[in-house]
Length: 277
Image (cartoon, rainbow, N blue to C red):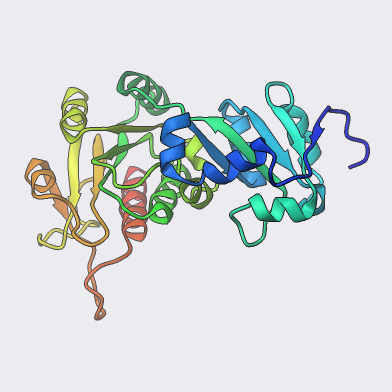
């Protein structure tokens, strides 16, 4: 790494205001106030850069690099972002990971509008039936990140978050999504706005619930649909269930009465993909 051709500033004190800001951005109140959030990790940052997400600053520690591609990524980042090198011991203090890989960035929070989301999902779908994932009141950042990861893997056209209980820019969402937060169109809106959007595009709402006899593998999911997943503890709201045109369940054969919400979302999404061939 001694051949690095980009300019960077060396920071050595944990009292440096830039270092302090990193720690503060772990807190949602600071993220809401500053409209900034953290992106940590090579995969996460590289995907943000690849999909054109704006990056303001990058902090790096060469001793924690895991491969040989970090320099090329930093060279891309330096086109628009400030770069700061920090000693290994200091990076371990500012990282929120047990095994940091030496890259931590600050980026502005870019909130997607429903109109922009609409444009992106229609472009992704082209002439194919829309496949959307609607997540209502998901509480755990890890679950939300996993849902985004599965949505990306299965080629879901977009994810709608309603009545949010967790911050999509939470560092643990970014981490659990392994950067797919930047590859899948995501919009946060009210339930009413979501219903209007689905109605406008003739998208049927598919509710996952144990209170139905229809197995998710035995229902036609080939048309334009939005698969709705609810809270980890209570499932979908009564309003969401009442609004749904299709209700499906995932069979349970053990003593557990439900699956993790991210696992349920993955099964339902891939069943829709399977049916579509």
